[in-house]
Image (tube, rainbow, N blue to C red; front, side, top):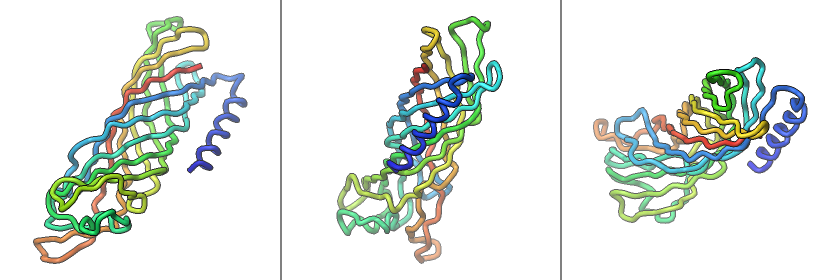
Length: 246
């Protein structure tokens, strides 16, 4: 992941140099986030949420007066949430060497807490406007926003109805390494100086790939048999963007 981050950082730097004489703007952002999990399995309920953080660099290329393509490179920390098991029994992290063998199979009402870190590459379209062209205060909207994510770290906690609880399990092998998501957002920006703009906005992000690896199995009481756990688990997130453009 370090090589990926360095490579994209170099590409962004080269883009910045090549577009320096054009309508290009460069900035940095730090965004507190609130994320939660959802699944398409009624017996695996999303419950609880994660507070996290995103930060990174952004670049915008204005191809018209108020329209731009944007991209960047960033990091998303502590994304995910908690799933509540509704099956009589389940083995959800079979590829993980759990700290206690009693956690290999979990009973009903066990809670699996996911905490995932991503290297992220967002890209999309941006529109900005204001009361007039000379106004220092403008509003903006970004839609659609697509984010390509690579897992850099994945940890999990096991809580709830379990023989023992556990924290900081390395569940990297039980989550998908690649993430794709879409989102929308908007806010305001204030031009404090000719080359200094402050941005505040609210963004929504929805992952549409499966975050979980689906290598586990669950006991189906209706069939009185074990079956593959193949639900789609993904996260939603709200973030408050705080950015500074040069």
